[in-house]
Length: 401
Image 1 (tube, rainbow, N blue to C red):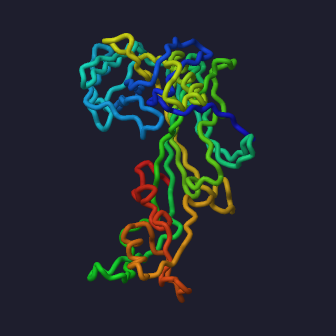
Image 2 (cartoon, rainbow, N blue to C red; image 1 turned 180 degrees about the horizontal axis):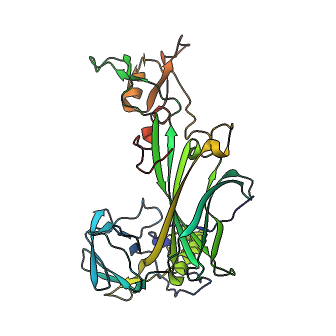
Image 3 (tube, rainbow, N blue to C red; image 1 turned 30 degrees about the horizontal axis):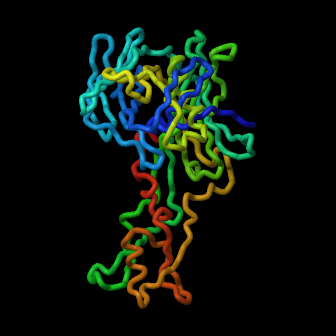
């Protein structure tokens, strides 16, 4: 059985992605420009009573390390006679100074004033239709390419037919068990920093069981526009290969379903088309993807991004590897965990102690008797014996067994 999905890479920040394609719903107007630094606005205000978020960055060239955050801006969302101020929490991330939820029938507008005094705004946006998805499920499938793995599937239905356009995000959390964790660890001679000797001590620093969390980094879109009814059935928001270590033990995923407007769906669908173009990987681009944000001072200035107001619903599920792969070998760990037995020293100086103290190697077991050119202990990569490399040891508050 196979499922099809529609996924676009989520890359609003790079201006090298900002070029024109005509979407199937409504077209965008193009201009032709060279690369330049432009403000990038990413904001979705929802009907949840929570601290809302606006992210401001700058576009960057392909060979740059990443999008620089826009710091020191004044950010506000205005709607229903209220003004909600946002405070910079981190580099380019702004959080509302109070919890609020978008209300039906109210128009909301984003306002931004950057540290250099330039003003930016958005079109007025209203909350979309409210649709909670009915079911979130996990199913073992084989893809069209013959890959075995787990599909995360969504079902929802809007009897009014007013939702139509959907976007999904997910947050996955999984248990990690370090395969070579030992209750013993090695330390350098604490009484002689120049000695090459190491000693075994009780392991009080390395963790065997941890929990890692990862966020979706793609745009996942779905539309029922061409169907007889507004029903989402077995839509795959995530596929996890059977050989992915994240499902080796216990896995959880939280899926959020956003109901989008026609305009916001068109924007992100066009962004999806852009992400598949080979010509994106160059500094000079032939066009610009226009969203609903703009400069209030200079109509010629290019601003990238979208301010959205959307209803959202969410569900979480858990499953264990044995639930779907009973009696089968676990997926390969993130590291092969090969072992070695370095000597304590050689004519060039200490060998094992610097490896241990730098954290690049970790004790596995004794090597008895050592072979030629071997030391007394087997070691391996730290990630194999200390799961903190991949995630914290604290059990998440939502976790259930």
